[in-house]
Structure formats: C-alpha cells, structure tokens
Image (cartoon, rainbow, N blue to C red; front, side):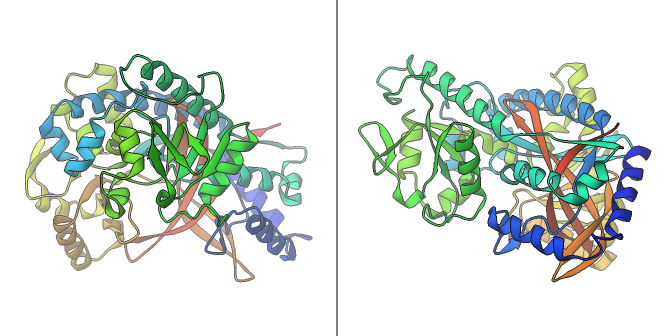
Length: 465
C-alpha cells in the first residue's frame, strides 16, 4: 500500500507548513464539530486532524467479503436458532430467547449493521459484527463532509489526489423502507394482526430509541441520526422509552403513531430497566410495529456468535466456499470457560491454552459494555494476563486470535496541543440488507494491555489523479 503511505506522509508534511502550523484553524474545526453535534460529553468525536484513507482495491475487497460473510451469518443464525444447545452457547437470557423467537416480518437477519475489520498490507480480518449499535454510523457522513471542506484537505488533493466520501445514511433510509414494505406484506397475511393504517407506499413513521434518551435534549448520535434520516425524506423522531404507549394495536408517543422502531440499544439493556410488559415489547410480540433490527439480531451483537462461526462442528453443513471464507477472514474465537476445544487440528484445554498463547490472543467481553475491558495478551505481563484470564472465566468473555492489525500515525489535537499518536485502526463497514454502503473508522491506543478509545474517523476513498 505504498500509495496510501505516500499520501499520509504528504498530508503530515502539509500540517507542518504555513498556514496550518498555526493551529487556530484546528480550534475552529473542533468548534464546527461541536456545533454539528459531533461531540460526546462536550468532546469532539474526532480529535484528529486527518481522515483515514482507503484504496479502491481495499474497498472492493471489503465490500465483496463483508457481503459474503453477511449471507453466511444469516445461515448460521438459522442453524443456531434451530438448536437449543447452540442457543445456550450464545449465553442468552430466557427473555432474550423468547423475544428472538418472535417473527419479525422481514427476511434479512440484519437490516442495518456493521462489522469490525482490520486491514494490513493487503490482508483482511473480520473480527466482530454489530447489529444494534453500528459504530460511527451517525457520524461518518458528517465527518466526511467537514473534512472535505477543510482548506488543508483541499490543498492536499490539489493536482494529485481525488478524495471521495463513501456515503451511508441514504442507503440506511432505503433499507428501512424495504424492511417496512416487507413487514407490511407479511402482516397482511397474519390473522388478527394490526400493523398500522398507512399503506406501504407512504413513508413510515420512524421512532429512534436508545438507552437514557431524552427526546427533548438534542446533541447525541440518536438525534443526529434522526436529522440525517429526515434530510433524506424520512419521518424520524427520537423518542423516550418512558413515553411509549401501546393501545388499539398502535405504538405511539402522544400523537406520533409509530410504524418502525430503529433500535439502538441491546435487549439486555432494555430488560434491565423494564419487564416484558413494556409497550415496545408488547407491540413487537403482537406484530404491530416493525423493529429494526429485530430482537433476533441480538445473536450477531454477541461475540459468542463467532464461537459458532469458527467451530467446524457447527458449520460443517455449509458450502465449502463458505467454510473457506471463514477460515481465511474470521479469527478463531471461543467463549472462555473450563472446557476442551479444538484449535486448528489439536484438542486443547482452553484456559491452559489461553495462558500459553498470550502473545497471540486477546480477551474481549461477549457484549460491549462500559464496565468491561478488552485485554491484549502481547501487551501485558504474565501476571497481569493470568489475572485477566481468571476474570474472563468468571464473566462472559471470548478469547480471539489476534490477527495482525493495521495501525497508523495520526495528528491528534487536544487541549490546544498537536501530537502525533500511533493508533490501531478498526474499519467499520456499514451494511444495509447485507450490502456494504459506507464505512467509518474507530481508532484505539494501547497502554498496559488495555485498549483506549481515541476517535471516530471518516473513511475516504483515495485515488491518484
């Protein structure tokens, strides 16, 4: 990827020259992010001064492989749902299993989703899947737009490079509409099921629900996503879970009758606050509202799904090409427990293997939660790693082979100061009905074996003129 390396070097040299060495423009750039709600707790989501570049070849490969893997995940989801034993391996609560069994009215496992991808020297690794909270989705388009308007970026492109944003939100709106139309057709076949008075040709009323959401306090991803969807012609509002009502076959908030719920929270988060009598869950069970993504999509939000995906006793009935793709692009993953399992051709005692393989594996929580950390074996002392393994045996964690991850140097602007930091880059391709239609990047740094979130970055396609 010499082209990308040369482009990054050129970009960084421009940063050192006038007028960009005077960082007043960087202060203004961050104020623009705050004004456009691209901030969390007052901190810009992108405290970096360079977007992440991707080549045409990388983009084509990423689109092809993620699309194929999305189809494989649909098949594995069907296999898991048909087997109580496999469902137990996913470590789902009884209420989660019950909700997952409810027909959701459309054919795709994930309408809107993203994957976690690492690209390095032409190699690709897909290490995670997100169906409930696609990382960076709300920010990607806006960040791309404001980066492309920076004088620095315009100087960088002049006469040598072409930069293009990938786009995502317009495809999201289309995917939601497609799911809604399919849901309406499916609902018309069910006896005694009220799915709303609107015809499939009219735009659905979309309610965006998240945890701790106040519909009257703009300034987060949910409100930004609603604004972006409305700019694409949708009818979307952020609603509070506390204000939802279900009566006479309709889910509503006051005079807003809801056709589609865009779910940005995990089922377990919802069940922690409410029971199964919550209006959203009653409407869902009655088939009175289209939920995107469905509660069955919880399968994919768990990293334990990758335990099934990389277990050949589970995937043995898949086509040979599917199994080959999994071997080539998905890292070996197992739920951490006191058991024996297979690694390559060998049977191993899992806890003992994790301790021995410290340099080559990482420990990740089954679900992304603020109170659980990821542990990188190669960055830890043996004593610290032993403690991490003991923790993982008590708490839902997976162990995953650590493939060579892509890292890059980024200019980071914080507290009025510019510093260059090495960060690991995770690409999050955004998929709508199984097709990649955009991407964002998440940057992390490492210290003492723990990962620290640094920034969300727009992913721009770079081409030489």
